[in-house]
Length: 158
Image 1 (cartoon, rainbow, N blue to C red):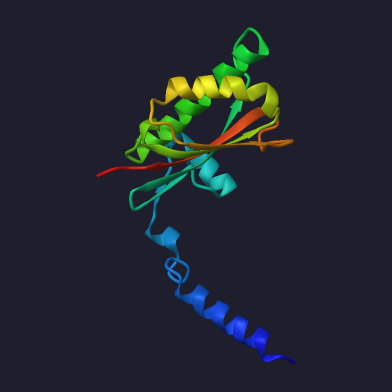
Image 2 (cartoon, rainbow, N blue to C red; image 1 turned 180 degrees about the horizontal axis):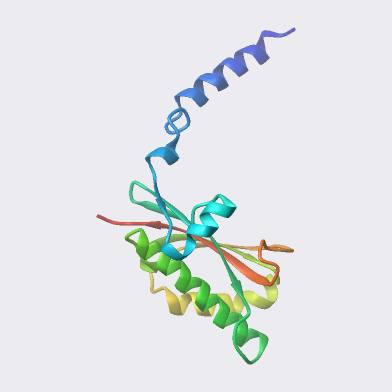
């Protein structure tokens, strides 16, 4: 048996055990952000709506659904606005706002149909400079009638 795998394993073990946050559990030092209306979700699903550590807020995905009357695009835009408002409320609970968002990831059930409306809604909700944004197509979300899931990272400046 070669010594290389044993050396690699030992090196990996040292790196992992000395990595900041891994050995001491970074979530223990984090502030869990749970708006009052989200406590049951936190308890039953076992995830925080957001976690704040240092000056960074990591917001879990918020699902948009079609809302209101009108065309698909109008109902989609209304659902996205509601999801972004929900994200803003979560950020406010952590001492941030949509203006502090530096990174967005969106998961779309019909990316080609939704992206143009998503861009327009997001640009109205968030003023420049624009955050980084990754849009991903997917086949399903945890909420059966969900159209798009939005997760963000915000950085709070001192």
